[in-house]
Amino acid sequence: MLSGNDIVSYYFGIMLEQAGVIDSTTQLEINIILNAWCLVSSIIGTMMSDKLGRKTLAAISTGLLTVFIFIVGGLTKVYGNSISQAGVYVTVASIFLFQGAYSFGWTPLTLLYPPEVLNYSIRSVGMAWYTFWVNGVGLMVTFSFPSALEAIGWKTYMINGAWDVLELVVVLVTWVETRGRTLEENDENLDVPQNVFIDAATKSKYVGRAIFITGGNRGFGKVIATSFARAGASFIGLGAPDGFGNVKQEFEAAARNAVRDDVPTVLLHHLDITDSDSGEQAAEQESKGFGKLYVLINNAGFMTPALSVVESDGCFWWRTSDVNLKGVHLVTRSFVPLMMKTGARLKIMVNIISVASHNLRVNESAYGTSKWAVLKLTEFLLVELAHDGLLAY
Image (cartoon, rainbow, N blue to C red; front, top):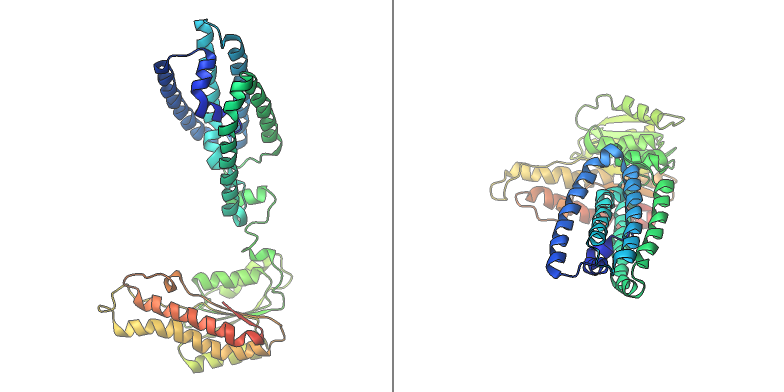
């Protein structure tokens, strides 16, 4: 907004009058051609952003527009009140070159570059502030430049050109090249820990801690368990009704890759969360193997085929509640006593639910109802066991 493009965007008519173009029809024709020229320039710049690189593109664009805005200022001073047709044409051509230079680089980069240099954890907030400041500066320019053009005329372009020199220096000195890199790789390039709020490798709080996860042999549960292994958890227990494959070796490898001194001790339990005896046996084995439990994650879930309430199979419908609600209830009853024996001041329970617990999804009554019930159950657990140091969410 401060590069000078706002002058052309909003006060092109004044610029043309200062350049000696007085006829309104001629101004309209020039304006239409200018917009077409800017469109072509921005398309070319967008296509070149990956070939040249963001920093190079910004430097070329800023360097050229700086030169052209100085030329516009000089020509306006010399030919602004002149009847020289050649002088008028050269001034208008310089305006075209300036706006083309801006469109070539800054039009694509204003949308492309900011998200690439904002880390995951601050990207949404950063883009909000970026948009706020861009619009704020645009508002300032819109109201201040008419007075400047009226008061000092061609000198406005010279002042703006001096500012553009500073912009070029900032680009050359501070910008980081992001071409050909993913957003995560850009984080590394900016020397920012990747996904600092969710990357388990940056956390070391779980050394010596014991974790238990239902349904941890695949999918989301397995990913959670792997994260705890990378975070240094010393004991990881998994409960599932079917095979575990090579999860133990995978957790050990994850810990080594995170440069942990010790690999976790892993216990694998054949667990039917809908059966109270199975839950009690798993909890007993955890107590004998680990003697403590800091984190309980009720991850296992079940979903029926998408059918309306009337069309649904009664057995499948209630099977969903058995796994998603009854299972959470039984596992909680079996493992919370072990958590209470743990000396830690704070114990954590995570019950995996779904956005379906809040939204009304047609033909998913069984799943949505069961997840909503788990949400309410979690609220009761949080209130009832808060005084014992249990944080449930």
